[in-house]
Length: 133
Image (tube, rainbow, N blue to C red):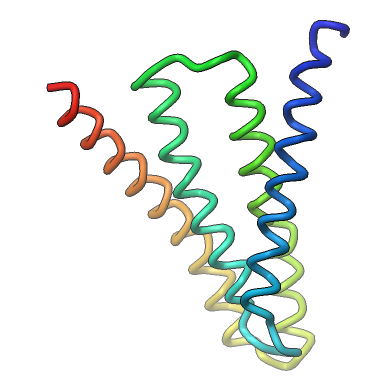
């Protein structure tokens, strides 16, 4: 257990940073009552894109310090993205009598984050290959 403490600390520090960044996005893009949750969508799509870039960088470009992945991946990006808020936003839209935007949001978010992750990983991979070739 003692050897896991640095990993736990890295996740905790990264999570605090990511959660603060997510809060900043929410402040910059406030959602009015019953409004479409653009801040959550932007946060989740951008966070997943960054995760795609990070995973290519630390698995295909170079091997980072053993705490880099827990700090940046699990911590920062885990704290930044917010799929629990996504679920709550769907419920809030339905409760506000807006089932169509709720359904659109429910169906498009998973597709958007998968596309963002794949696209960012692919572009990062191409840039890395181009630079090293």
